[in-house]
Each structure stands twice: as C-alpha cells, then as structure tokens.
Length: 210
Image (cartoon, rainbow, N blue to C red; front, top):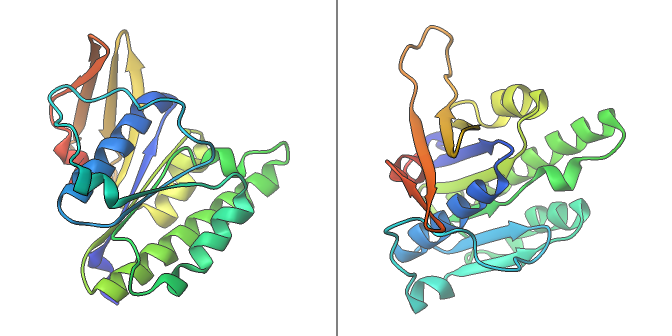
C-alpha cells in the first residue's frame, strides 16, 4: 500500500477546547467534499465547540456524512478499529479522535504507555485499511495532551511528519508544527485568538491539508 495516501496528524496540547474546535471544523470541512467522516469521543458533546470566525454553517448533506461515535472505554475503541473491515466498502475517508489521552491515562505509567501505543497502532492500521478500500488518500487526526509520551514517543512512531504542539501565550493559542529534522529552520505556526466567543485564526487550512 502507498503510505503517501495515509495522512496521520497529532494535535498535542492542554488547550482541549481549541483542539476540539479544530476537529469539529475538520469534520465539516471534509464532509463538505463528500467524504465520510467518523468523529470519536469518550463522552457526548454537551454543546458545539467554539466556532471558527468566518466558517460557514455545515450543510445538511455534510452533517449526514459525519458519524459521531461515543466510545466510553479503550476496549470499545480497539473493537471499532479492529472491526472496521466489516463495514467495507462503507468505511470512512476521515477518522477524528478527540482527547485520546482519556482512553489510556491511568495511575500505572507502564500501562499508560502500552495502551497509548496500542491505540495509536490500531487507529493507524484502521485508516490504512480505509485507504486501501477507497484507493485514495485517507486522513487520521488525533488530539491529546502534550507530555513527553505524546510529543516524542507517539509522535515519532505514528505521526512522524505531522505533529502540532499548542501553547498558550496571554489570550492567544499557537499551534506549532514539530520539525521532522533538527536542522530544519522553518517552523509552521498557526495563531488562534478568541474574539466574541469565536476563534479567529490566520491559516486554519494548513491543518486541514496536511
């Protein structure tokens, strides 16, 4: 299989609300192109994420292409990824996972690490299978926290070319693209600022088209 047809992206940071907004807008973005999208969360949204300033409301047809899956345990997530072939050929083009760390974090650090690796491997295998079924590019985007486990280990093994790390400066949030090689000088950054209960950003499509 052509690995260039599988685009895996990791969003790391403590600004969960911003990551959730990006995931939701990504779901709408891809569904408007006719892609089937699966949005995975550990608990149901109580309200819609903070909208992006200037974003168009999703069409009815786009919303019908988004499946929101509430999987409350890591076992449920594994079961979904391992059984995705049962839905062939109606598998998604896009899989989005909100706050993956909620699935693997526990008091046992070794267990946390093992679970994190297993879940990432399952998700990557699932989206690779979807690419094979569609014979086209598929997308996996995962949001999580920003400890060394995520920004170094999981990033290097499963998301080596596209990891974004957020940090908060005053009332602004910056998502910076992690450099694949230490000698690279240019660093992509996307700035978000909350204005009138909406997120204003300079280049959000940089995140969509990775």
